[in-house]
Image (tube, rainbow, N blue to C red; front, side, top):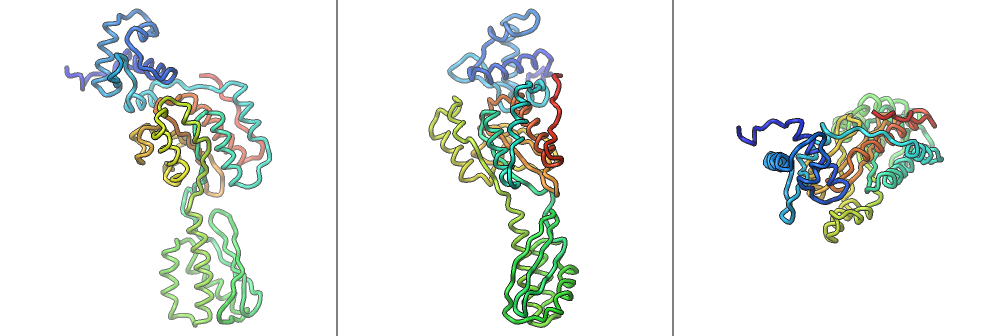
Length: 354
């Protein structure tokens, strides 16, 4: 039987689990003798060496040139995360610390999202990033025009994420205030629940149906609304703790550390924002699309903000990340944020050990 087609036996999985967890703890390759000491039951070093050779040929392990020991490959980490990683429960001290950190007063969503990244970074010991992400594209739900004078009015725009925006507009050509209800109706009939591009198309189609005065007013209002929608589609990303990378041996190379830290600061808009509603996603090494993250891992948790929005907290670190601990802390933190946005001061119960 060819090794490439060999079954991933329970013993191979146990050895892979030992290699991953040892490398996470020590950042050093592990050899057969050390594995034998950790294996349940009696097993010879020769048998372990054969299994290590199989796992290496199957692509789950790698052998550094300078060592007889093995380290996990991205494929090995993926199998570990999917099947072998034991679910961790937080200690009473950890849950209490997270609950305390979220009990303070924070003004506004942006501050909550930014502070969340700072707190997660301090708890997990890795750099983080946070972002508010719309589950669906934001559109205009309703327009309302309020007259101020013959040459000015207030445009009120109600968005699909429950935000209400308004702006005072000055007209080049005066429009009678008694025509504003008619123009509001026109806006609500043709320019709601669509994107900015479709708004412009519909505006052009109305150019020969309304006079110059009304068209200028429509154009100003649609341009204002389109700008609001475009801004809503731009996600503001907050990064924290990039310098924490320097404590990991993987980033002792100053250039390598600088490149990743610079990416997190200068190109933070390109950090992963996965689609879908999965509460947690883990991207390991080459699974990251951006070249700057190809030798790193990213763990991303989502939480519900409400108003058709979700928040994302991402943790960035070496592929030799303590996935189980990061996942446990990040999961509880995300659940706590969802509870905080949903019902003030209600935090999730402590998860029991499994």
